[in-house]
Image (cartoon, rainbow, N blue to C red):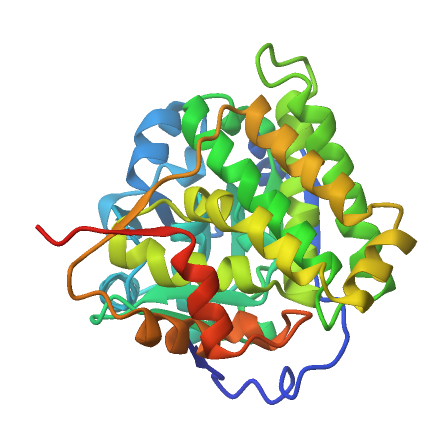
Length: 360
């Protein structure tokens, strides 16, 4: 994963910090937009599937004409960002951007907001990425490499948490999203840049995900709200302390092999935690947090089982170069905050445990 600083001198070099959006509302979307003054125009960026599924639920002010509606299909790419910017500028307005959907469209909307300089309201429809509360935007370039933009200006001004929109997520996808949220907290807890606030958020997010996992087969009244809050807390952890090797591996294999980010995380997270926890300082940190490594591993496996998440098998192509893979993963920005320094030979050994060759 490459990093674009985007004049982000305020973020680099890394300092221990906590960064959040200006306002988070726990409400249905309709009351929020009713409180706003008339005459405000909106440029809506939405996941195509989420928009068509929930269009009738959205306030009338968000059911905009075609020129003010950008529907995102597929992955968040730099090409899609260019298309959305062209459409925004062609609309001729300085409308507030409203993002409706999951992490892909949120990352696009955050990048566009930063480029055109207008406010952003985010309505997430998934509980896993945490993008609604992070100062990052991750897009895929023409080489299939994930490029992360980092800047406080990427943070939305307003986040509206309406758990109704989570209720239609297919169960298999929901499981992957939950695992991603869990990984933000697990990796953030042992990050080099963890701090007292991010630790508290991480521990609470893990507890909430565990609580929700007990209802995974028969969701209770507060199931989706619990997952949504856990996802936001995990996003705050990621935005404040960042993550580590499990995310670096997912960034490499996900776009190259068409693996859902959460599925890749499910594959690598337990092993990464075990290897990192072999370091005395990491083990001591987890003990002090009342989550020793073995206990935390059991919790992770319990969540995977509760949501029926089966980690994928990665079958690499015949030209797969494990040394190149290790080098690329080591360069991932998430490795800057992994608690243990990994050499390339050790990374290659670790990766070799998870890939199968296909020489046909």
